[in-house]
Length: 301
Image 1 (cartoon, rainbow, N blue to C red):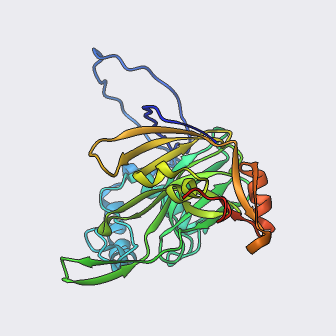
Image 2 (image 1 turned 135 degrees about the vertical axis):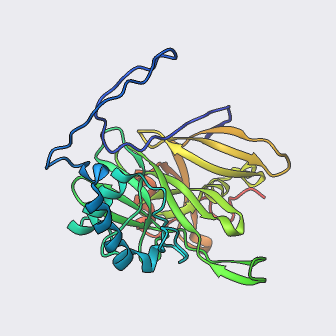
């Protein structure tokens, strides 16, 4: 594996659609415009009348407040806030709830917002799926929403606000996807316990902390860094993100080229370390019972 580090700054824009383009000029002055939405305008909710607002308040108090709070601030774990959301965003989300085109949970099909999208625009990934709203999800134009699950761990920590130990499952966020959807990157997060670590996903591997994935490949340096996140390239073989060295207090960019990886085929004395292509060959071996990384006898000390 070729490992190089350089200062990299990547920003992943999750875009559902692009309506047009424009240019910004520092000396430009904003010009007022008038928009007259028609009866079929999808953004009609953004121009609600006093009657519409009163009716919306009635529905919200009767159907939404029990989970999301009277003021839109949720007090229930795993239930998102509604206060402060963009009107158009809420409008489209509510239409999705009504049509049943969302995932599988208490809202009868609700998932959270899109965090990343591939270059063709036919695969998107995001967060807040599953019954606890802690799973990541993938949407494709052919299959709709599919849960990606979450990193399987339960964390116990001391909560100073209630002065007792609390055990909870972190949420898994997907925010970057390769063009073919075979490699997804994201993070495992539990802010109350100070957890925010980069994670990587393939269909047969599932979610794994990126640090753990690299350590299993023999990259010992990974244990000395807190990897905060990584974006995956279109072809799924390059990762770039940000990390913090555990023995210092500065941020650093990193870039990884992952063309081949190690898997361990077999068990005990018959176990054999194989170097295979990433991600296709790796997933093929995992499907046949192999494990990610070097076999125990081949791993560096």
